[in-house]
Image (cartoon, rainbow, N blue to C red; front, side, top):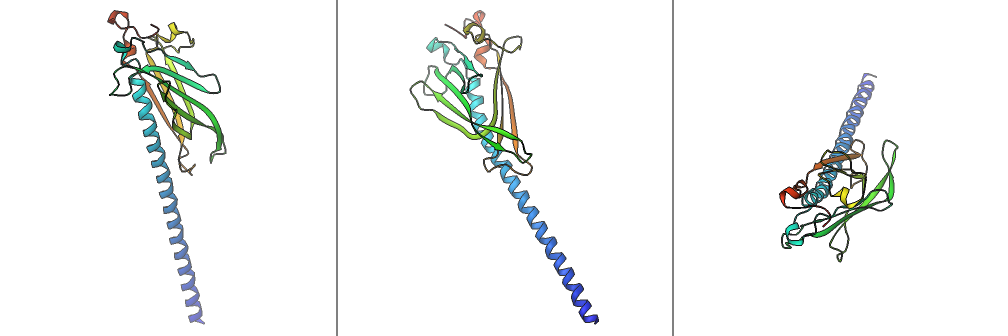
Length: 212
């Protein structure tokens, strides 16, 4: 009888240990998956925001050779939103080129929280004759560009004269993991306040940024 009880207790203990080890292993796998998703999000975010930040900082560059000014244009109310400007983006090309960003909602995704959010395609074009390059497809859940004048007030008019007063560009975005939503890291955000060097100059500096 005692032998039977000893074997039964041993089986219970062995089963408990196996369940504990399996639970630890599953938690470890979940943690590894979450870490991988977060790393993927951060990598995708860095690759995207590096392009955006570099472009926006260069707004108005190459002006002395092209004479065209920054020539900002923005549309954040249409289904396909756009932001375009003149900038020098290629070290091998001395003159400024027209750079255009466009983004639109193309689908939606349900997060673990149960919220349904839109996902966007963000594209970039340099020069009017080149093809569009997709910077992000169905990874961005929110993308915003806000132009501010010398008093840091939001620029609400799209007139050339008003846009020429732009001194700071606030840009923000939210992204989901390229591997899908996870248990913890569903979205990450990025916010940047950019003061393009050439937009800080005015007529007193012998350089007009805006309509020619």
